[in-house]
Length: 91
Image 1: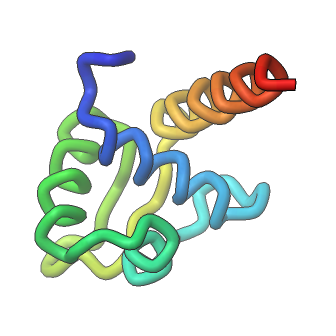
Image 2: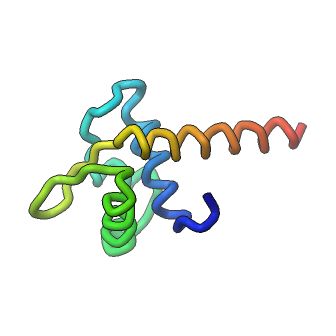
């Protein structure tokens, strides 16, 4: 997974967490921006990457909300599991 931009993976992970177990719910990009503390321009490029990968669906005109696909959820889960494994290794 390391060949993918870290911000793209972070967006999928943030969308997954913000959905709170409600798959296929739309997540506001402003909520993702707040969670990741990134600029709009950075998010815009990374969201575009995610949509090309099939990880996200995005509103058509200007991106105000995204929806995590099953593929994007798999990316997020893999990331969260890795973080959990790394956290257990610290103790």
